[in-house]
Length: 363
Ligand SMILES: [Zn+2]
Ligand SMILES: [Zn+2]
Image 1 (tube, rainbow, N blue to C red):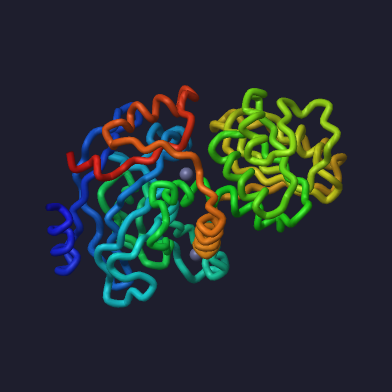
Image 2 (image 1 turned 90 degrees about the vertical axis):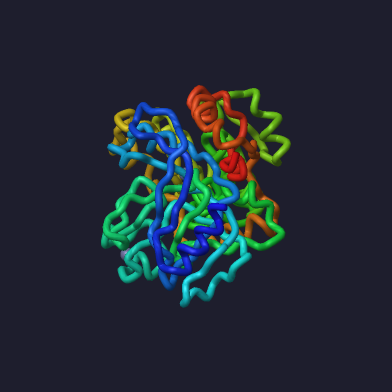
């Protein structure tokens, strides 16, 4: 068994052998791939991955749509599994615990951002992303993500997950959950606030669920009017299929729109002092330039970008989600179906978040 040899490797300080699915270049399809991870350090834990979510940014990365990727590439930053070995100085986890890993696996730990647990904004540029990144803490070797059977990670960057948690649904929280939870906290959403969510895909649905749980009155902007019953079922007050003729004004608008659009259409729908958080990313080269004149005349409205969330907040999001049973809608697939899943995600045919059941790797 691979796991047994992993435990021997961990004990003797050797590199940890791993297997997963990778693409060899940006137009390649996913194929089985064997590789190794850095040895278990004294502050590291070794996680046997049980579930890994497929995030839309995995597709952008695998196809080098944001930057030239590092190949071979094993994507995946929505990871949930079981701790199977711990380093000598680990205190947060013991063998047998459940753990999650999101978009980051390390950072400098010393700069102001890191000390404030905003590791995603490390001022020394040492945020190490879970895959497609050179790990300066380990001889600059490339990082490999969650479409695989294990991961070695500093305990500081692993999230505690209780034993009774549904791990398949927990995995996507590590990116889709924190990405939408973080701006709601940053903007201090409270009971009675009017919150609008623009874009009603996977991220949008999560934003709606969190905002409702925080007591907000929630509205949705979606191109597709036939999502109205789904939105109403969640507790959304109203779904708009356009920004025209909207009389409502909002305290916060979260945009999860992943395509080309004009942000000013939404800024104009904010209350005085209202805020707009941008988490969705249009493809590179398709963003609309901001018209500063219109922004000046929009007056006293704040627009900000939000990128995932720090580790402390990710733990807070995990605890909040489990307490209130807030999960994404998921569809479990076997690992040999990744290529199909990518096609469905690209063509818009995918209905739910795909989550890979890693047991399927053994076949
Ligand atoms: Zn993601
Ligand atoms: Zn830092």
